[in-house]
Length: 438
Image (tube, rainbow, N blue to C red; front, side):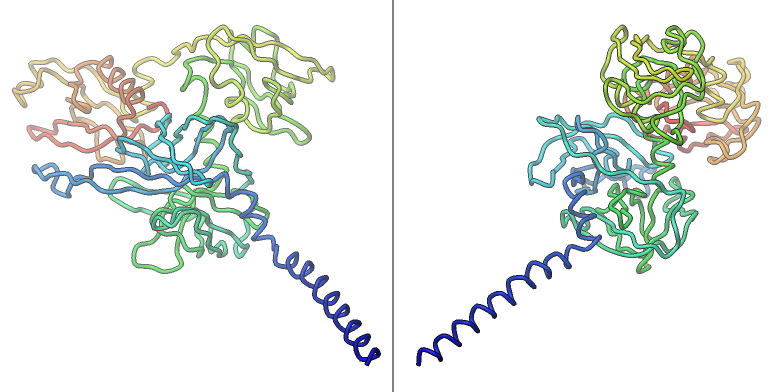
């Protein structure tokens, strides 16, 4: 009898041992690269929702607008609460609500946007530093490699889907006024609400921003490549745009560490302290820098006159210098801004000539040249047209145009409604600036 109990005890111990070890090993085997990629980035992804007014298709004929609930996704790109998303997610939303992975909901403000690329930056008040998304590169993407989409699909927060890269360099027209170029195509499920969320590679690095789906199709979604996204976001968060200050440095990633200075603006703060092209910058404001965006982020929030420390290597000598920010100086003439932002060259037209065609206008600007593939060209404006209005303002001089462009940037107006005279007929459409200076 003792022998029987002894045998049973041994069996029980062996069974317990045989189940305990495999359980730990089994759990570790389940922690795949996909699980780790999501775990490392989940807290960096937020859900965005709010209400907006949508005009009916016959809006210009007096149709009424209706209120709809909007939803989307965003990614934290700065621990102070700066969040990247698609512009169409927050366009026209009076109160932007952001829900964190913890479940906490707070309001956000629209900081900067670029309707042409459909990217926007919003900001929440961060009580503690927020985790920032891990950024990869999109220049080396391979067709067939595994990708993950993370977002607020149909309002189901932090939904994860998996797929592959189906194709690269796709062009997609989603509406009469919105077209995307050079997109990543994926068969990872991207649904309404995913817009603005990250497309991750198997290493958990963000390689794109999910933006669109093909209506009526299955397994066809699109994302903006991260390399292009970072170029736009760098401009959206530049200190010149946000704080109206300047530093004068343009840099590119180094093959070793930090950044290599490409150009230094003449008579800029950087020029005044002797920074030169070819210098290597490793830290700005005590923070390591790997991109031009890092420079802008490090200087963001400082006023003109504030000093920021830079750790640089110059002629093989490492040193720390202090850069004092200056107020941004406008360098473009009104004519240059009109050409750069709208793709138009215009000339003053006497009031009498304009009123001979249409008496209700006090004047206008004669279109002398239209830049190929520029905003005006895309909207069908052509030489000989007379620009008589932008948004709610008349355009009698270049100064009228620059005033509207400044207001569009300050008030986040988005696409500007324009009015042109062609013969005696008034035509209209919507112009979106060709730069991120809106």
